[in-house]
Length: 123
Length: 108
Figure 1 (cartoon, helix red, strand yellow):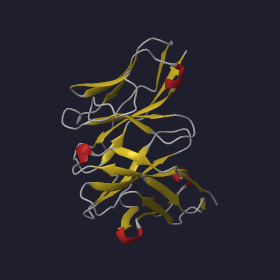
Figure 2 (cartoon, helix red, strand yellow):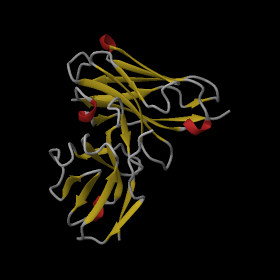
Figure 3 (cartoon, one colour):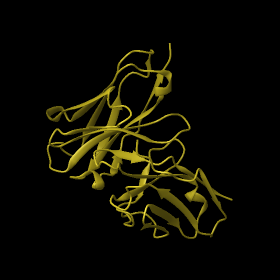
Protein backbone atom coordinates (compact mmCIF):
# COMPACT_ATOMS: atom_id res chain seq x y z
CA UNK A 1 0.00 0.00 0.00
CA UNK A 2 1.53 3.26 -1.17
CA UNK A 3 1.13 6.31 1.05
CA UNK A 4 2.70 9.76 1.03
CA UNK A 5 2.43 12.39 3.75
CA UNK A 6 3.57 15.98 3.65
CA UNK A 7 4.82 17.79 6.73
CA UNK A 8 6.07 21.29 7.36
CA UNK A 9 5.00 24.69 8.67
CA UNK A 10 1.48 25.89 8.05
CA UNK A 11 2.57 29.53 8.22
CA UNK A 12 5.73 31.21 6.96
CA UNK A 13 6.67 34.86 6.76
CA UNK A 14 7.58 36.67 3.55
CA UNK A 15 11.25 36.26 2.57
CA UNK A 16 11.61 33.13 4.70
CA UNK A 17 12.61 29.74 3.36
CA UNK A 18 9.99 26.97 3.30
CA UNK A 19 11.08 23.41 4.01
CA UNK A 20 8.61 20.60 3.32
CA UNK A 21 9.16 16.92 3.94
CA UNK A 22 7.43 14.07 2.15
CA UNK A 23 7.49 10.79 4.05
CA UNK A 24 6.36 7.83 1.98
CA UNK A 25 5.85 4.10 2.30
CA UNK A 26 4.98 1.19 0.07
CA UNK A 27 7.78 1.76 -2.44
CA UNK A 28 11.49 2.49 -2.57
CA UNK A 29 12.98 5.51 -4.25
CA UNK A 30 16.02 3.40 -5.09
CA UNK A 31 13.94 1.26 -7.46
CA UNK A 32 14.51 2.04 -11.13
CA UNK A 33 11.72 4.20 -12.54
CA UNK A 34 10.52 5.55 -9.21
CA UNK A 35 10.24 9.30 -8.75
CA UNK A 36 8.76 11.72 -6.22
CA UNK A 37 7.43 15.08 -7.25
CA UNK A 38 6.01 18.21 -5.61
CA UNK A 39 2.92 19.92 -6.98
CA UNK A 40 1.16 22.95 -5.53
CA UNK A 41 -2.26 24.50 -5.86
CA UNK A 42 -3.11 28.03 -4.72
CA UNK A 43 -6.64 28.34 -3.29
CA UNK A 44 -9.17 28.19 -6.12
CA UNK A 45 -6.46 27.94 -8.76
CA UNK A 46 -4.78 25.36 -10.96
CA UNK A 47 -2.23 22.70 -10.19
CA UNK A 48 1.39 23.71 -10.70
CA UNK A 49 4.25 21.23 -11.02
CA UNK A 50 7.30 22.25 -9.00
CA UNK A 51 10.04 19.63 -8.93
CA UNK A 52 10.89 15.96 -9.31
CA UNK A 53 13.64 13.69 -8.07
CA UNK A 54 14.19 10.24 -9.49
CA UNK A 55 15.68 6.97 -8.32
CA UNK A 56 19.03 7.93 -9.81
CA UNK A 57 19.08 11.23 -7.88
CA UNK A 58 18.44 13.27 -11.02
CA UNK A 59 16.52 16.44 -10.26
CA UNK A 60 14.16 18.46 -12.42
CA UNK A 61 12.62 21.83 -11.67
CA UNK A 62 9.90 24.13 -12.90
CA UNK A 63 11.52 26.59 -15.28
CA UNK A 64 9.81 29.54 -13.63
CA UNK A 65 10.79 28.56 -10.07
CA UNK A 66 14.08 26.73 -10.45
CA UNK A 67 16.18 29.47 -8.88
CA UNK A 68 14.19 29.14 -5.65
CA UNK A 69 13.75 25.37 -5.39
CA UNK A 70 15.89 22.53 -4.12
CA UNK A 71 14.73 18.92 -3.96
CA UNK A 72 16.62 16.14 -2.21
CA UNK A 73 16.04 12.63 -0.95
CA UNK A 74 17.01 10.41 1.93
CA UNK A 75 16.39 6.91 0.64
CA UNK A 76 17.11 5.26 4.00
CA UNK A 77 14.37 7.33 5.65
CA UNK A 78 11.94 7.18 2.71
CA UNK A 79 11.82 10.96 2.63
CA UNK A 80 12.00 13.70 0.02
CA UNK A 81 12.59 17.31 1.04
CA UNK A 82 11.66 20.43 -0.89
CA UNK A 83 13.00 23.84 0.00
CA UNK A 84 11.68 27.05 -1.50
CA UNK A 85 13.48 30.29 -0.77
CA UNK A 86 12.25 33.86 -0.56
CA UNK A 87 8.61 33.01 0.11
CA UNK A 88 5.94 35.50 -0.94
CA UNK A 89 2.19 35.70 -0.28
CA UNK A 90 1.57 34.49 -3.85
CA UNK A 91 3.20 31.21 -2.81
CA UNK A 92 0.27 30.49 -0.50
CA UNK A 93 -0.99 27.11 -1.66
CA UNK A 94 -1.64 23.51 -0.84
CA UNK A 95 1.59 21.63 -1.49
CA UNK A 96 1.24 18.02 -2.60
CA UNK A 97 3.82 15.28 -2.57
CA UNK A 98 3.24 12.72 -5.32
CA UNK A 99 4.67 9.49 -6.63
CA UNK A 100 5.55 9.28 -10.27
CA UNK A 101 6.70 6.22 -12.14
CA UNK A 102 8.63 6.67 -15.36
CA UNK A 103 12.08 6.63 -16.83
CA UNK A 104 11.61 9.60 -19.14
CA UNK A 105 9.58 12.79 -18.89
CA UNK A 106 6.94 11.78 -21.40
CA UNK A 107 6.02 8.87 -19.15
CA UNK A 108 5.77 10.91 -15.97
CA UNK A 109 2.36 10.89 -14.35
CA UNK A 110 1.16 10.82 -10.79
CA UNK A 111 -0.31 7.55 -9.62
CA UNK A 112 -0.37 8.37 -5.90
CA UNK A 113 -0.86 11.71 -4.14
CA UNK A 114 -0.40 12.82 -0.56
CA UNK A 115 -3.31 14.59 1.10
CA UNK A 116 -1.57 17.94 0.72
CA UNK A 117 -0.53 20.55 3.24
CA UNK A 118 -1.70 24.17 3.19
CA UNK A 119 1.09 26.69 3.51
CA UNK A 120 0.13 30.31 4.11
CA UNK A 121 2.64 33.08 3.56
CA UNK A 122 1.83 36.10 5.69
CA UNK A 123 3.53 38.49 8.04
CA UNK B 1 7.68 28.86 -20.53
CA UNK B 2 5.68 26.02 -22.02
CA UNK B 3 1.91 26.04 -21.50
CA UNK B 4 -1.02 23.69 -21.91
CA UNK B 5 -4.26 25.49 -22.71
CA UNK B 6 -7.68 24.28 -21.53
CA UNK B 7 -11.09 25.96 -21.67
CA UNK B 8 -11.97 27.34 -18.22
CA UNK B 9 -15.38 25.69 -18.16
CA UNK B 10 -17.60 23.16 -19.90
CA UNK B 11 -21.26 22.56 -19.14
CA UNK B 12 -23.38 19.58 -20.13
CA UNK B 13 -26.67 18.00 -19.15
CA UNK B 14 -26.76 14.55 -17.57
CA UNK B 15 -26.47 11.79 -20.16
CA UNK B 16 -24.81 14.02 -22.73
CA UNK B 17 -21.19 13.90 -23.87
CA UNK B 18 -18.60 16.28 -22.47
CA UNK B 19 -15.42 17.04 -24.37
CA UNK B 20 -12.54 18.87 -22.74
CA UNK B 21 -9.59 19.92 -24.86
CA UNK B 22 -5.98 20.60 -24.02
CA UNK B 23 -3.61 22.26 -26.49
CA UNK B 24 0.17 22.44 -26.50
CA UNK B 25 2.87 22.63 -29.12
CA UNK B 26 4.75 19.62 -27.78
CA UNK B 27 1.75 17.30 -27.55
CA UNK B 28 2.49 15.55 -30.86
CA UNK B 29 5.72 14.32 -29.25
CA UNK B 30 4.69 13.91 -25.60
CA UNK B 31 2.04 11.82 -23.91
CA UNK B 32 -0.83 13.55 -22.15
CA UNK B 33 -2.49 12.60 -18.89
CA UNK B 34 -5.82 13.66 -17.38
CA UNK B 35 -6.78 14.09 -13.74
CA UNK B 36 -10.13 14.65 -12.07
CA UNK B 37 -10.21 16.75 -8.92
CA UNK B 38 -13.23 17.20 -6.68
CA UNK B 39 -13.40 19.94 -4.02
CA UNK B 40 -11.15 19.33 -1.06
CA UNK B 41 -9.62 16.21 -2.58
CA UNK B 42 -6.36 15.30 -4.27
CA UNK B 43 -6.52 14.71 -8.03
CA UNK B 44 -7.24 11.27 -9.46
CA UNK B 45 -5.77 9.99 -12.72
CA UNK B 46 -8.49 9.18 -15.26
CA UNK B 47 -6.50 8.83 -18.51
CA UNK B 48 -2.83 8.09 -19.12
CA UNK B 49 -0.68 8.00 -22.26
CA UNK B 50 -3.28 9.95 -24.24
CA UNK B 51 -5.99 7.29 -24.28
CA UNK B 52 -5.38 4.55 -21.72
CA UNK B 53 -7.79 4.18 -18.82
CA UNK B 54 -6.54 3.11 -15.38
CA UNK B 55 -8.27 0.25 -13.66
CA UNK B 56 -11.29 1.39 -11.71
CA UNK B 57 -12.05 4.34 -13.99
CA UNK B 58 -15.46 4.01 -15.69
CA UNK B 59 -15.55 3.22 -19.40
CA UNK B 60 -17.36 6.49 -20.10
CA UNK B 61 -13.99 8.24 -19.73
CA UNK B 62 -11.86 8.18 -22.87
CA UNK B 63 -8.99 10.14 -24.35
CA UNK B 64 -7.77 10.96 -27.83
CA UNK B 65 -5.02 12.92 -29.52
CA UNK B 66 -4.81 14.84 -32.76
CA UNK B 67 -1.84 17.03 -33.55
CA UNK B 68 -1.32 19.66 -30.89
CA UNK B 69 -4.64 18.91 -29.13
CA UNK B 70 -5.67 16.13 -26.81
CA UNK B 71 -9.27 15.59 -25.76
CA UNK B 72 -10.89 14.03 -22.72
CA UNK B 73 -14.35 12.71 -23.56
CA UNK B 74 -16.91 11.75 -20.95
CA UNK B 75 -19.82 9.89 -22.52
CA UNK B 76 -23.13 9.73 -20.70
CA UNK B 77 -22.09 12.30 -18.12
CA UNK B 78 -23.32 11.69 -14.59
CA UNK B 79 -23.76 14.15 -11.76
CA UNK B 80 -20.78 12.59 -9.97
CA UNK B 81 -18.52 13.65 -12.86
CA UNK B 82 -18.85 17.30 -11.89
CA UNK B 83 -15.29 18.29 -11.02
CA UNK B 84 -12.20 20.11 -12.23
CA UNK B 85 -10.19 18.33 -14.91
CA UNK B 86 -6.50 18.92 -15.58
CA UNK B 87 -4.30 17.77 -18.42
CA UNK B 88 -0.60 17.16 -17.80
CA UNK B 89 2.34 16.48 -20.06
CA UNK B 90 6.06 16.96 -20.33
CA UNK B 91 7.35 20.36 -21.32
CA UNK B 92 8.80 21.03 -24.74
CA UNK B 93 12.37 20.39 -23.59
CA UNK B 94 11.42 17.10 -21.95
CA UNK B 95 13.02 18.10 -18.66
CA UNK B 96 9.93 18.92 -16.67
CA UNK B 97 6.22 18.44 -16.33
CA UNK B 98 3.42 20.92 -16.83
CA UNK B 99 -0.28 21.07 -15.99
CA UNK B 100 -2.98 22.79 -17.94
CA UNK B 101 -5.00 25.56 -16.36
CA UNK B 102 -7.87 23.25 -15.55
CA UNK B 103 -11.47 22.97 -16.78
CA UNK B 104 -14.45 23.09 -14.48
CA UNK B 105 -17.08 20.61 -15.66
CA UNK B 106 -20.58 21.54 -14.63
CA UNK B 107 -23.40 19.01 -14.91
CA UNK B 108 -26.58 21.02 -15.42
